[in-house]
Image (cartoon, rainbow, N blue to C red; front, side):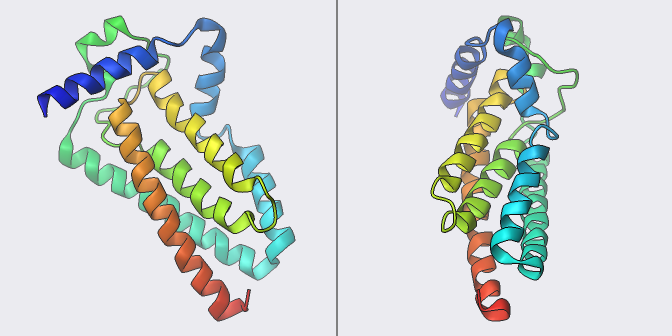
Length: 187
């Protein structure tokens, strides 16, 4: 286990130090939770356009549940494992930390989990209407996930675990959503 943690630290430093001041603003922007509001507005419009009012409202309830599930599961893991974030470690003098606030524990990344779950969920719904919706949303989720390493808040292992749980939760919510749409809306 110690070797795995050491490897995670080394990969973190490598990926974190790929950054340059020229691109710092971009990754800090991407990692901010409000950066995707225009994309969320577009996704809401696309859901409404293709599903109608009631199915869109039900879909929003599913999204709220999905985000709550990923965030709370990440909090349970953080409280159980109590793994300090890289920005709390001494070796961070060799890395780059671009945020104002570090946070206490980092295993696993809620940003990575939530963005991936949302991408899987909405991408699966919208891919039948828009050819590149799924790959576009997954690309966005990977940018958000990498941004957590870039700004110094998470190890690669934290991010990969978040992506894993995001895929799992996004797929489960998509399957539940599909069942609900067929049962109650004949969609």
